[in-house]
Length: 172
Image (spheres, helix red, strand yellow):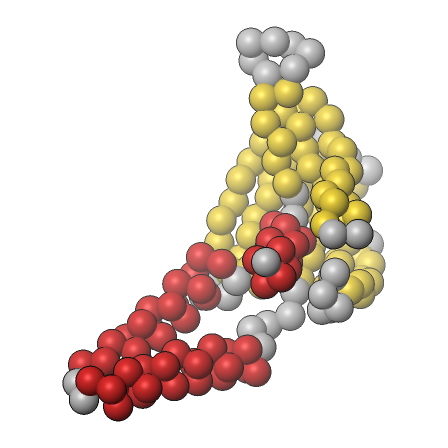
């Protein structure tokens, strides 16, 4: 059985949630975010190239323009390969564990598997941003030394945290 719903993130961007039920103990949740905006890509490229052209007019060195093109291309490739997440999948198999997969805009995939024996709890964590409270899903991992302790807090969907971090950086 499959179910699809649309939501909006804290910036008003659209997020798509797809839920699949394979069996009572096996479920998959998939969150997809919008593709790279042509407007933001054009704005960043124009800004870098205008600054480079300004520097070129001051120093009359063509290496400045070549460096601007090179930096823009490297920055875009780095952003697509390491930052921009297109889709995240959470596969929960009751007796085995939780598998989290992130698919980046460049095609790279990153998969993390957490054994069910290491999971202490799944909680909804909250972050306070200005006058807003933002909730996100986290997995608490058991501490191997202290059985009642938590060794690590693993956020489930990185897309939500990226939007939050981008918003904090832009407003500082």
